[in-house]
Length: 289
Image 1 (cartoon, rainbow, N blue to C red):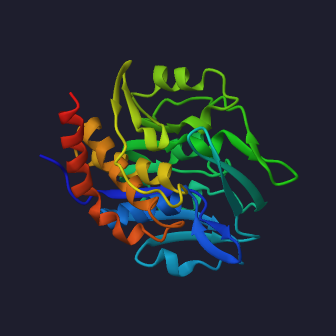
Image 2 (cartoon, rainbow, N blue to C red):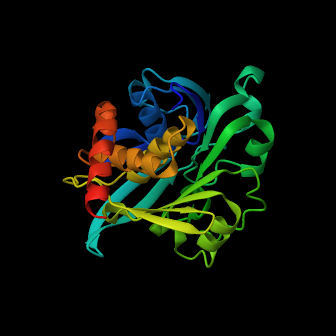
Image 3 (cartoon, rainbow, N blue to C red):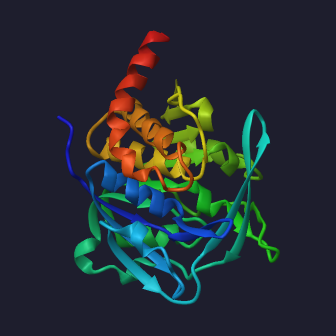
């Protein structure tokens, strides 16, 4: 029987994402937390933002533990046509302090699901794994494999994780593997379940060397920002509720299909529609067999 209403702890920067003169909340932890909330989980968000943070309204309904100091991490995203879809070019205007587990109250250091979702290495993987007990530990690889140069341009950062022992699920996208040599092979060799996402071309779920390819939910994409983060949250929540990895991936794909239908996080209020779309995806996958 699937488990309902698990407690989720997600950690990472909530950012300022710039759309012209509009400032919106962003970051993997933001998109993930809002996805968990919309799907009925009890979610706690551990983050670090600057004293200039101005997107509190986007966090309404979330249990937020935020350290406020310095400046909020700022991203400017530009999407250019390429490769049959969109290619993202990012610039960083500021970086907030690290998100550290030592700030968590003792009663919050045990949870059903721990989701580590850094944007720019603000999460120390070993420290978090050693500080929080969780039934399932999932990571979004993106924030450990890139850095911001002095010019603010995002570039690959080779990542040699000292130990992935204790990580149950890793979510990684095609862009995350640029400049990373054999990172995917290392993830597959060490982490029991790896979700390898390909945008609107679907995903691959790799379990102990066995790969299952799944379709994306067909939709009209407006802005791909947050798609991978939303997929990861839906996928991890499905696993935590007791769904098998394939049905969990369908839930993740359904959630991602919703967030891309509007700019930034504007469609997150509709995440509750994801289970119905996941059921449609199941029918699509079975009809293709």
